[in-house]
Length: 164
Image 1: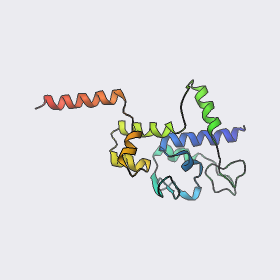
Image 2: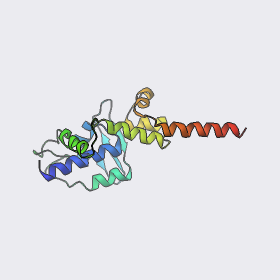
Image 3: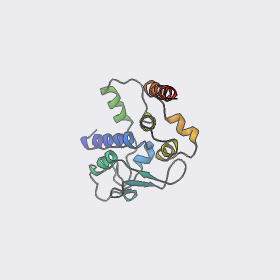
Image 4: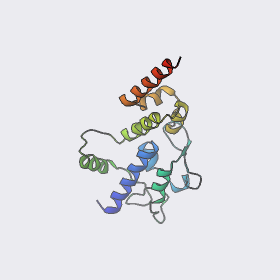
């Protein structure tokens, strides 16, 4: 696999990690959907309904560093620039092997993003917005709470009780 293809896959994986987007949402993204000045991506085709995605600074920088391919509308064009990259699974497997991680799916990046947001105190309505969910139960399945975060919440509750 060429260095260029590896770089595209690495950028796609980083964008997945820092946005919580679904793999298809990233791979099928066109430059016309991206507004770096406003820090957002419009996704006309998603699992549920079209939506606007707010981008954080890291995601904006990832997108700014991606070279544009002449005559291709795709953020991640494939070998045939008229089509998007179709598969980044091999690159993901190489990342896992290098990191000595045995079992992880690309979709786990979405779960990790949600967990990080929840641990940072992002409200459930905002988490739902980040992930494009319309059902709170779906978002709750994504936001796995760490033992550390739950213990910290327990400490906060105890401290509040002691103040009374």
